Length: 304
Image 1 (cartoon, one colour):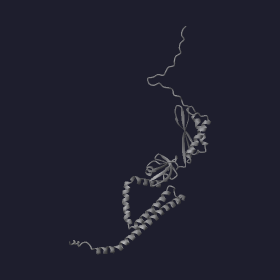
Image 2 (cartoon, one colour):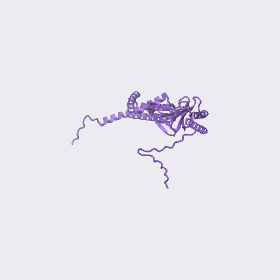
Image 3 (cartoon, one colour):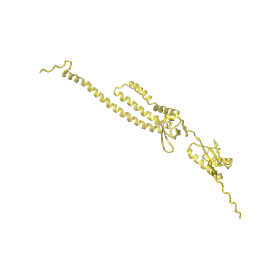
Image 4 (cartoon, one colour):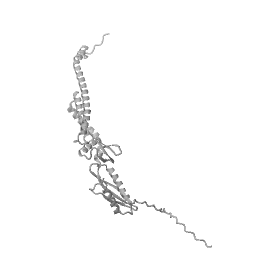
């Protein structure tokens, strides 16, 4: 039986073998160049990553000792330098594979726009962090009150600000929450006024008690004479008089100085025999529809 004839369009084995042999040098060159580029990219990536980590540690240590750089900016400057080295490393790695940097920049711009629209809330934290660094309502080490949190600033990041409270609690607050809210900086001013109340009995002489308190706080080492201390009547009710003591002190160990002033004022009132308010016992009142029991009348003597 005769074998079927092969189509004339199919190449012969000899022709195919010759084509492969002719392409082998080009394929070899491509494989060798690709392997070299891959090894070079790996080396560049390793060097760039190692260099960025080393520069981050070195810049952090150098900026920690720099007196002319604000403490709030030191960690951000170190991180920006590290991120810049990583960005250059990524561009160099992509260049090893023939990627055009201009096309890459255009692609990153379009991707950045899409990511920005998807992460508006996150990017608002970055914008708020930049504004906080520019306006400087607080610095690292100062005590602030934001979003019902009172603590000392440990770090101002691009996304969040880290605080440590007096109880030793670590609190992380989004920058957008801080920038859009009210910021109370309790450490910025050199002096600060302490205000606390003292209660005395309503029968005491208010003018005399005020003089006792003023003499006591004026002699206290914590009190400043300018502005002068003041003692005002806060409130008066049926059993007590509440006096408000207002003293200006240095804004260093504020709570400790306030505690010492309370002790000094209370000691002065005790030595002056100023009585605290005496609570009055309440008189029982009859409920609706009821009457208080009447005392029994004495019995009359019976006639003999």
